Image (cartoon, rainbow, N blue to C red; front, side, top):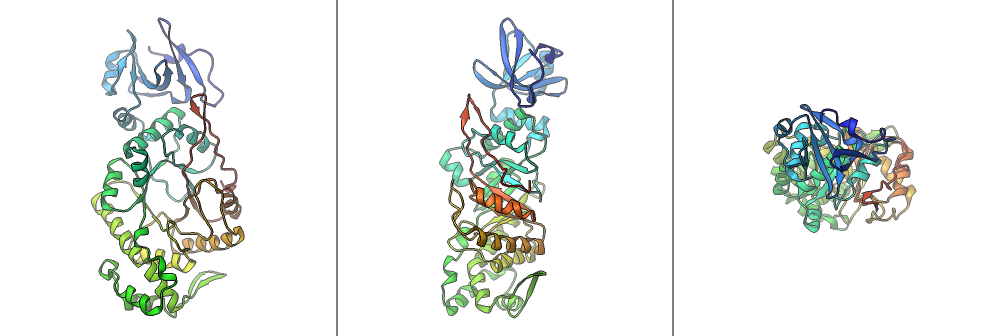
Length: 415
């Protein structure tokens, strides 16, 4: 089958990647996703549907050429056509031949984590991402979610790879190892090929720091792991006390001693744990492409602008390079509903967070639990400044056995 396109009925689809009939002969017909057509080593590969469901098909002018590629599957009748299941082994092979199906670093551009928690919506997410100037993260799942959904990290990655191959998406996507807490979590996600590592140090946040008396704060600060922090309590206090930090022309930070003690108490353990996991990742896997996010959003108390400054400034001192930081914003970010809070106040605080990120280095502000936060999308988009990452857990409705791209990012007007 030297020119498989000659056997496809009709003309090229209108850009919606509709199924197109392919006649293999002997009354054997399959439905091909046009945008999935790709060639390598004298073979043509594509995703198609037949009576048994969706699969990868490999065709060439000889069966030997197909066998040389190394995919696992069965040949269709007497044809030089191999039908391969969309499984982990074949996904691994796919990523070797087609680099666009492998996750890459997202970098500083605005990005959106789609969060296909059940593996049903990646195709829809890819179709949405094609419409916007945004870096997508298609493979995204936390250790906690993997346990609850009884999925493997490799399975989440594979579904994303098959989706971008089917939809012909060549612009690159990220893979977020979300809310990692231990070195074992890091090992697991590196092994599965993830490149975006979100560290969750929430267990080390001292939520009561906002209300503790000063003598208790001092006691807790002195008991922090100063060796891991490469510092002393006295040096830390001296670095911030009686100091004015000019963030921008109209924004400065001048913390009081009590604010310094509260911030250090609340986030001192966070800094030590984050640095520990960052160093473990970089030392254990120096050749593995990775970018780093710190998340302190799942805490009881709001991250003030000074506390954000403290976290980012200390991580910079410790040579921990972050790509994004997720503070605990003012207001309520509950799952699956719009923002609950004063949008004007949120905007004022968000702008301060942006200015701090611009002052201390090139990293994005990350909005977690971002599903359905359309008022926040509009507020952030209208600012047209800074860089943002939005993390969601979005499932879209199934329609005619294929996910329908119902998610809209129109509110993020800066995209």
